[in-house]
Length: 378
Ligand code: 9MR
Image 1: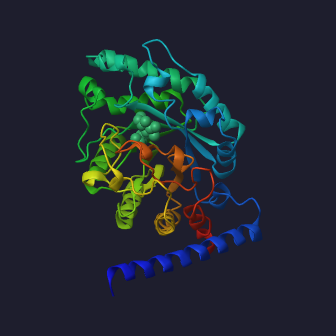
Image 2: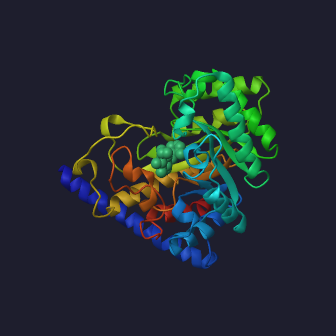
Image 3: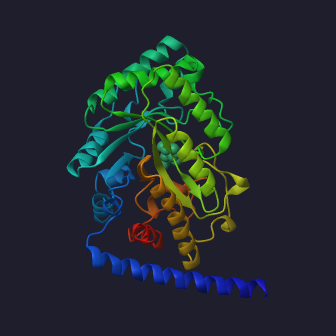
């Protein structure tokens, strides 16, 4: 068979599958309840979260607001609690949007996550000028105590340390490591545990399904645990691609972190359908490349065949999440809809990616339907 012919037949088969999935799922909602949503379909399994930008917190788009309130039962602030925004000067804090974010979560009875306390990226410039250990320790104490103290009992879990590891599993040479040495990790968790003893405390990173980085992470967490540090969970960010990581590696990752006695969370889930330049994977926000149309093939819309493949990839991954729902406490998508996804600008700026479950008009995609029907197949 000629390759063109093969692909035409494959597309027809995929489309037929898509239509069948869509009709059975929408019919299914009506049979069960008119108001089936992600949050209530997976209610017995894990929280279903989303990341909110400032525009969502201020409620600029009524359709997005409705999605947030109905489809999700956990929220993470995408940017507004990062150091440069919340603590821009040594003694100045900006709590305007963070207060609104927490209030929004409370008004909707949501699981509220704080993101992120200690991260090398997007610190305020003055933090990078700190040169010695005692000064950094004092600043870290002020930062954690002030922010966690303000939301004590209201923010339920915190990404205490974010992305402390290199790809080979060694510790990243961040400003915190440079000034305080490895001790900064324990210090951050200890401060957080004291600031709000009831809050869950997480280590959060990308590429944890890669064996070397995962091994480094496990070693780091074991050391913290051996030193009596309170750490409740690990956030596997989950910036995934269509073909990587493999289901086998995702499964190993869930099992290995669960074996440490930690809650496992997938905290920043998205799946890029676009080509990656030079085999790049991960979420290092310092990497950016220029690209032409070959790298941005779906500017006019997502072809049905790709929409179906994305749905299948999401379903495969969620089937695994359901298998380990005893260990997984939360699955958070990194954004509300495709138009909002950071992937439109990473690792090449200005592309049109389709990473999430809702399209640019906040309408559900095939990927949404493919998850909504999963539980029925159990
Ligand atoms: O989605 C976030 C994007 O809007 C920001 O420009 C970027 C830089 O701060 O951070 C993105 O979120 C990151 C998250 O905070 C930590 N893990 C990687 C995420 C994607 O870069």
